[in-house]
Image 1: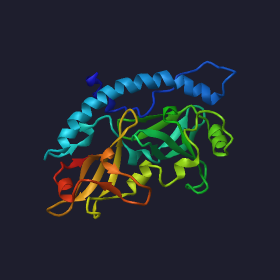
Image 2: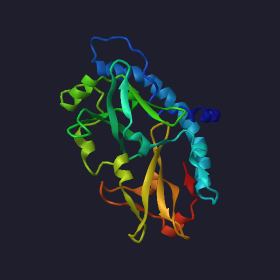
Image 3: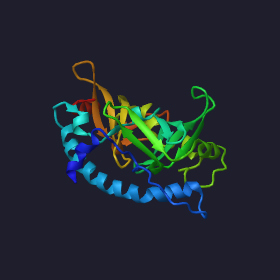
Image 4: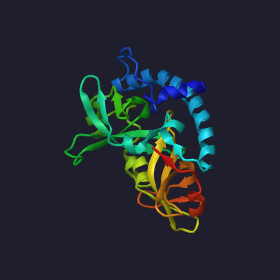
Length: 265
């Protein structure tokens, strides 16, 4: 199973497998049918991807403690940049673009709880934001590095969800995702990081997501001892999030962060 890692270099599946066709069931809403159809494929992907990802991160963790520069595409070929994911268009086969990913909600276990899809509005003004379950959106990365997000959810369903009248399992949560105390990729990206003494030691440059929807690594920008800055990788689980607008906290000192291996994209 470890060998499948190389297959993720050109194609990354985040949080869900491609949605299969489903048989009509008059006793269930369209949203419920979509969710049921995706479940088996999601479970199969999650099992295989987890085995491959775990094998990779064990080696990557050891590399971050070294002194040799780490090339991220080679060291973590299946990781996806949360920074790049935000703004990705969401499309379905019939209508084309139905929205864009404006944020990703991260649970207390550091796994994705929802894609926040922004629908409508002009330049983001007046747009509705709907928290869609992660398994209903397939994110792929093309050989040129660009991202695409596909779904079977329609624009009409998103509109109904935003109006608060969508009774199905397409929505992952209610308006709680707007609470500043809820961890999201966008809030993490906007954060600085303070050390044990309360002083700022770094800023967040990126959040790397795994093929099974885990926010595993934060890429931090730190000041180098010899001047300038460098990027390093730390586990998201090692950073304490309080709420949006407040710094993240780490138990590592600036000197400890500086001695971690530099990473580049």
